[in-house]
Amino acid sequence: MIFGGTVGVGILRLPGTIAGQLGSFWLILLVWVLGGLYALLGAVQVAELGAALPEAGGFYVYAKRAFGPAAGFATGWADWLNNCAVVAYGAVAAGEYLTALLGWEGRWQVGVSLGLLGVFCGLHWFGLRLSSGVQKVTSSLTAATFLVLAGACFLHAGPGVVVAAQDGVRGTGLGMGLVAIFAPLIAAMRAIVVTYDGWYEAIYFTEEDTDAAKHLPRAMIGGVLLVMGLYLLMNAAFLRVLTVTELAQSKLAAADAAQRVLGAWSGSFVTVLSLLTLLSLMNAVLLGAPRILFAIGRDGLFAGAAKVGPGGTPRMALVASAGLVALFIVSGRFDDIIAVAAILVAAMYCVNYTAVIVLRLHEPGLARPFRAWGYPWTTGLVLLGSVAFLIADVQEDRVSAVRALVLLGVALPVYWWMRRRLGRVVSG
Image 1 (tube, one colour):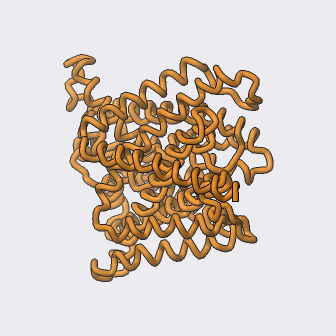
Image 2 (cartoon, rainbow, N blue to C red):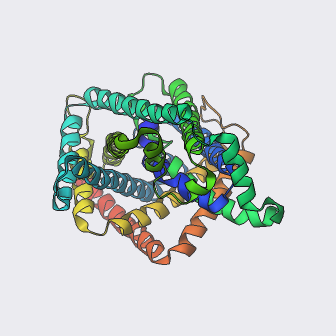
Image 3 (cartoon, rainbow, N blue to C red):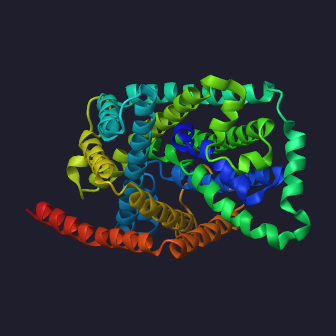
């Protein structure tokens, strides 16, 4: 789940952008390591929350426990919107790749995207066993295809890592000092942190785990390390066949690397690789989104969402989530939706890292089978980083920030209306 919910087409595109910002082989690898370590520190914070509160719903559950029902609902609302936006992103991009692979005209892309959504909803309808089996297959195929590309790059007689490294050092002008390096490093880190997003995907299933206290921390830590290893491997593989200068000029690093090592097969190979990553992403995130609504519904706010089918799927929550995803797909404002979702995610990080501190202070007796490493220093570090990223996102895109604020503002009236409706039902 963590691998499928994290690894997307970002690793195929972003290395070129990062190389253009940094220009040095060693700085490129360093920033991917730093991004992975930041995600790892975030994972151990959330693993503490998930192991202590092993309930379906993820961030909604933690925020509700730390800050009360209204804040919990707003957090769950934001999390659900983000998950649905990610599924829509996967469906739209997968539709583009699939129509390109089949040679169909672009006008079929929306229909194909909706068709893929329908297929995954059909699989999920029958229960977790089938949908999780599909996840294992798609994640395994994605990992294997990445390894095939990496292996082909390392076996290719390209310029070599050493030559690429030398090229990068000459290109950066490291003698300019740390100040000249710091700004592009921060810009690169912001992009890379987004590429690592998804490391928390397992938290939505802790209630369905036989031993979440043991399995969740292991899965989250191991998942982040696995993804970080893959990202470093792919960057080293690209730099095996491309110099830093060539990589910096690449808009799709995987395609340029594949062109050099696979020749005429490269286009189809990268299309299939991209399609696999997106299908794996869609399946993983679509599994999680309904469980947020399920948790909200179980608290009485959206009672129908708490109804579970024979296979363990909250079916009404699945239908509601798929409906919002479909609306996003046909809206024609997809880039705007993703920009708003990115701000909501940054805010959600801030809320939940703060929840770790609040619960430590207010509920010291809460059973914590796993404790965040280095608390409170690591917690403070990732919280400050998230606040900084949130401020930067707001400064960079104030229109999306206002839209995100409006969406969060809508959550509170909806919450109070649901509470009043629940009160009338109970009293009646």
